[in-house]
Image (cartoon, rainbow over all chains, first blue to last red; front, side, top):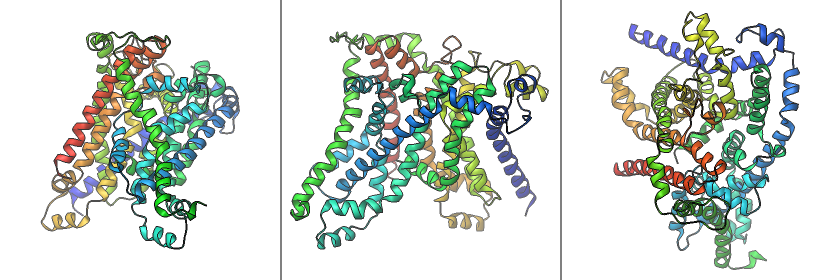
Amino acid sequence: MTKANKLWDSFKYLTLLIAALAILFPPYIIVVNAFKTKAEFQTKSSISLPDSFFYLKNFAQAFKQANMINAFGNTLFIIALTLILNILIGSAFCYAIGRFNFKFKGVLVGLFLFATIIPSITTQVVNYKTIQTLGLTNNLLGPVLIYVGADILQIYIYLQFIKNIPYELDESAMLEGASLIRIFRTIIFPLLAPATATIIILKTIAIYNDMFIPLLYLPRPEHVVISTSLMRFFGVNSGDWQMVSSAILIIMIPTAIMYMFLQKYIFAGVTSGAVK
Amino acid sequence: MFSRLPFKTQKNYVVFGFVALPLLLLFTFAYYPALELIRLSFTSWDGLSPNKPWIGWSNYQEVFSNPEIFGVFKHNFAYFAVGIVQNIAAIYFAVVLNSKLKGKNFFRLLLFLPYILNGVAVAYLFGYVFDTTNGSLNYLLGQLGFGALSETSWLGNGSFVNYTLASIGFWRFMGFNMVIYLAALQSIPSDIYEAASIDGANGWQKFISITLPNIYKIIELNLFLTVTGSLEVFDLPYVLTKGGPAGASETFVMKIVETAFQFNNYGLASAMSVVLLLFVIIVLSIQRFLLNGRGE
């Protein structure tokens, strides 16, 4: 190995180390302060370790005060219903588009792809009125409808995927007398499973992390979701960073765990989602 | 029952049944709002009353002539500027993690981690880091001997609050850009590099004449994501500064939300939305034109 190579290698590790520290520093602060008592928080510096990592009162209080049970419940409800509808509607649509030829098919696909150009954040002024007309403001179904209606990521992913499922499978099932609905239900949909998994992961992360839609459509306390619960909690406890830290931690943990286990799918999904 | 029908009939049912609902949703939540937005932008509608008085172009005149509205794009510029640096860092780390390196999976996992965390939680996380008196950044600066810097009000100074906020965006999204670049790098066939090595090319030469041209398309994609992303910034400033101090960190989307939902000026908010929509469409059209123009 030449001298220049060695130098380059050390430089690589040095920059990676700096990046790692920069990424870990903010969460580190949160972790060490979430376990501090109020007295500890006031006397110790913000980067020092707490006396004990078994002091869990902040978490208990944050969980209760931020109404996290409600927030997790509402968020899960919205995610689950959105996913079910998205997957059913998206996969069925792509079966129709991917397997059959019909008039205006090209126009139809074009309409869907062109819609990706309209950023949903710009259309909320009108969508808000639509949801209001449907009587779904202050209703968990409002955001579900927005998430299901405005995002076509699943259609893009399914369309890519269904092309790679050989049409011979459909044909042999037809010869055996299976109906098209049955073919979709028992052959195509199960084979779309990897695409479905990608969609589940990407949408779960996106909805869990979204704040704009719940802020607009769910202003009432009983409809609190993860993002808005933290905002309300901060409003009451600002300055009490040991309390805020524990609330932040509670909210970050679920996606962080999901990430640890599903990293492979997340990387693949993010790449295919972005390159649309 | 259904299976007894001839396939041609079945096909018609399936096509119609499976396409109708998504199409209805698409029109209700994408095309109708885009068109309705344009119509409302020529009115002075307050969002409630049944009549929507037509006022011609005056909302647009207001958008472009009132510095309080159009001038807000200056704040969005900070996110764009930081976004460029963020892309350079992302390319660098993608190249590093694509080379032979111990622990590269660990570093990839770590660098991408911020992207999957809840945005509001990330905002407060940095609210703590940047806090003037209790904040850990100022504490750290003090300990490292930068006493003068350690009393900086990172989120309270109008002249750089947008850069502070944009740096949080950097923290959050650099790994995302990096993962996209990494996927592109991995698809470059390795024999090109081997051939170049045999011809005596060094690492830098290989980067300039093999790597960069091969990921050009992805650089472009990431840059356009950066542009549209910086035009649409909302949650970080909304959560952390509420647009302050004195409106210095307000972004265009925050202005739209405020105009529509606080001041009930739906007409003006619609005109602002149309302007934003046009900007994004222009940016994306340039991207697609460039992509197609190269015959790919």
